[in-house]
Image 1 (cartoon, rainbow, N blue to C red):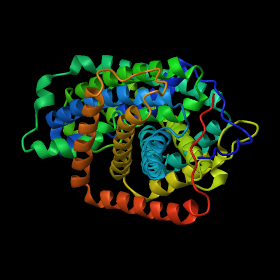
Image 2: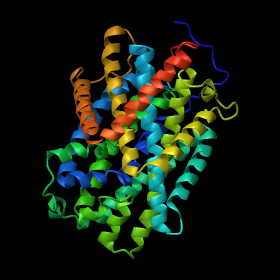
Image 3: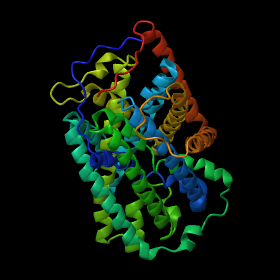
Image 4: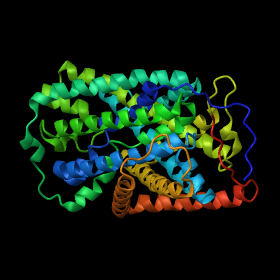
Length: 443
């Protein structure tokens, strides 16, 4: 298969382990600040705890499997590159489409929460106005360069982690197990399955680290370290935040709002307490970290797909001065803004989760396929306890996807419809005129 001509400008290898950890945790950490609490509304606290433990096992096994692919194939396409190598153009399209849905839908949900937190602080600030301003500001920040973007991620991610630890310290004295167990009558096993997308929101987007793999220094060592440090951080933060929030009062008051953490502090310390207001202000750091890092993620996926001929070529243009894919940043932002104005936070989260789970399935199948088809491929990190670990991740991904499809038929049909339309356009407009080629891997 012929290799494409080298692009006029390429991405730059500058990211360290600390920066990679910050990007990974930053992509996800907003999930600790909002979104997960919607799971309480459909499963109660006990059912949602079960769903979260299931999803935690899924992500632990998935990340140990996914790290092998990312370290072996450090390509900006991430899942698209793995699936293309394993299954050819059609596999690459399915993985790329699913990844785009995952990363294009996460930012509008986060932007809506940014607006809600800002409105909580100052009711004069409109939710949608703050959300739109967030897109403009952080697309601009990401255009300026990946080193600058990563350094910003380190700052806001560290602040976000510290803030969550302070939050836990403040509410822990008020925790009572009877509060966590209260009001759970009427929720059955079906609620556990219905709550899965909101449990996944705790960890969703950690896979986006794969999309900055071409910009990592010493990827053989840096990528495994970054992934494993980040998943460990997120497991502790997710379980700690959820359990403490459930145990400080009537959790039903938190189950359908976009700012559960400052509301929890208000329940514990009083609505006029300065800590509640301060935390709401600082809580913006967590949302900013995720919005910023997910903007970085979707732009690299658009860039990689366009570079391979799956999307219009102009999206693969790299800015000659800043060495960033500016048209991919802008184009993805326009899609996100359309989603922001057309759906609720819960619906956007669920659609993003559907895309993520499809991508997980294709990536795990790619791992199995490449183990057979390319046994000699250099694998700096090998999945421990293979094949048990990836099989566990695959099984749990299938269970979660089927449950979400069952409980969200409308959104599922929307996803499938968009996939079929996209594939038809892909075959008609691009494959005949410009057959896709394998994406190069930068040294």
